Length: 486
Image (cartoon, rainbow, N blue to C red):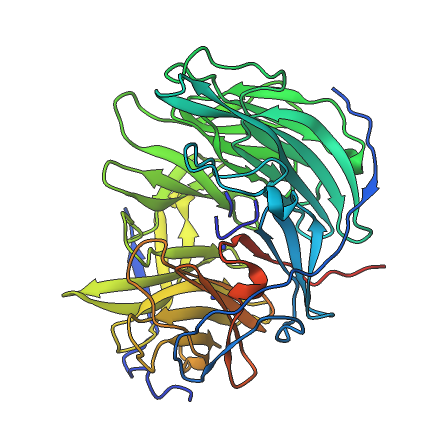
């Protein structure tokens, strides 16, 4: 699920500030069918307002209306209850699927529910960017005594969108208390988690209904039969479709599970021992379809491990433990099934950003660091990890002040000098206060600092604050791939 969240889901003056202590080396570490109703989604452009901007080098410019800065890819996002797109061709914001009337989005200060009736709350994309599934909130109420403990009971509908024609079909008219959804890479299968599809309500807030995992063939908008796969303990998380689209990995408190579409029920693949705090959650698959990256939850935090699915062997990715750091270690698969690891090491209170390439052999319990580079001799936090389409590495270095070494960077190789291509605003070193997301073509990066949003193009002489056009509380940013229409 798209996102700076799902799942979400789920995630970017040359060389003068980079220390000469980068290096390359090798280190070995052992250790029920629904009738579709097509409609056409409207398109419009919001009327934004501007705010003051931070001081950066190069300077920051506020964008308050179209045309937006030039990008090489479209950006999808949720804002004001709507599913929207920054169109890189027209350089305008388009509404793919609207939310409710803005006049109806008035916050109830007593209940403070996170969404309004009619809001688009989730979306998931196919790998080619041509299909999407979105969730729209259709009803909500509070369960419990008016002046006591209560929980929201929410109902959603799931919609299938052709991103080329903008036609919309109903996939699932009702799903209660939707938790998450995941679309297979070819858009033919949808997995989603909720408490049911019949409007059943819990007897009391302290007795919530169990979550259930469902799988549905999308049929290109003509859905097949919905299958209930598992009653989750207490919920199913980390829904991850295999690259071949026939296998779904997910986790709950009982185990890591694999579900083959040809089977009738999922198979327990990696149980969580009784009394153990380790809970394995899928992150993503390597391109070879053999290795599965997992998040291993512990008492104080968690770390990344790789599962070799055929042998069921695990290998820890060294030094990836994260608790509540402002710059947690980031990992992503490369096309050759190696790992690109971006981390901010803390050395006596100072941060030292590094980039590393690791070779994974979990079937042998071996992880080998093949190349690495120290990205700066300044105390900077690293984030925004991205492997670009042309084989270069992108990332962002943050600082709490106007440190000239902070900025967006592109690195051709671990033995090369990083190229600073734009600025970033000063940020707070706190969890979830700063985020970055690079477009895969390297044309620029979205920077989120608190409640402000910026776009840092790789070509140009300014950093752009785009909060006014992307919304003051954007969620689930997703850069689209290059969409080829026959």
